[in-house]
Length: 193
Image 1 (spheres, rainbow, N blue to C red):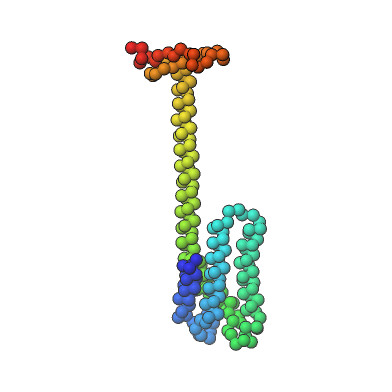
Image 2: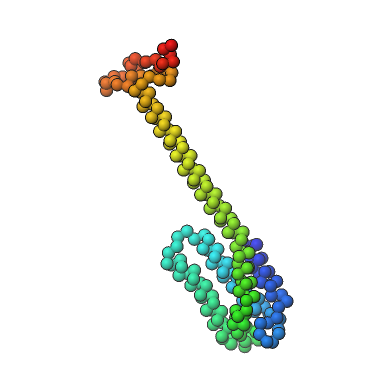
């Protein structure tokens, strides 16, 4: 979070450090211009970060995600149309419309968002891949364990029907009343010779 905050402030600040105003006045970009770019980058970064940690996507999720982005741009337009800030002596009147018409604004907001989200994205990607690899490994180990166990069970069933290997094998056909301790053991082929 500290790294993302640092990047979200200093990348737009550096991109607009020595630029002039996009209109014909030739003034340098002020705090309002850089602030608009920083706010846009923050809104994009926060919403994309939320999409990375969202597990279930329903219509409400889409409503709030896209609604927050639309509410941001709508509030920026309303604040720029009003003269409240102009009466206070600030140069915020029509600043959004001047800034949003430039390619520098959109490129800076896009690159700042991508750079700020690089670390969280790689963390989420690696943990997701690691979790999926563990699940696949568990499935494969369970399947191989089950196949070994079933093949051993099949061998055990075959051994009940025939004499093989070595060791003592009990008769396969016995009465329900027979007790296993009373059964007569058979010797395997290797024990007979």
